[in-house]
Amino acid sequence: MGTYDGVLGPLVLGVFLNTYSYGVVGFQFANYLETPFKDPLWIKLPVLVMFLLDTFQSAR
Image 1 (tube, rainbow, N blue to C red):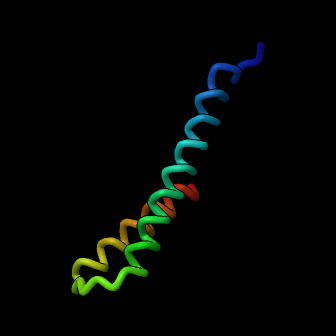
Image 2 (tube, helix red, strand yellow; image 1 turned 90 degrees about the vertical axis):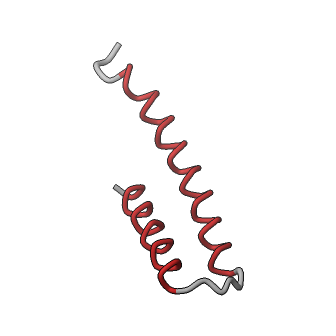
Image 3 (tube, rainbow, N blue to C red; image 1 turned 135 degrees about the vertical axis):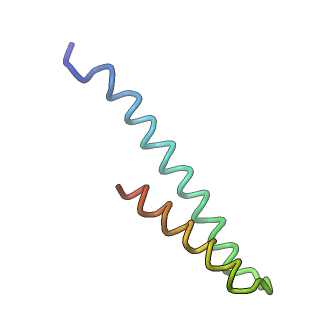
């Protein structure tokens, strides 16, 4: 058995779960942008910032 055998399984599982949750968040974000809400900018801006932070965290 190799040195990393106990780490690779949880690592792959974590990558799959992160990718799945990012897809759900991306879908929700796209749905929010396409729905004609009359939200002010002070509500839309944090939604955009949180999506960008999630994007950068997932890409890291």
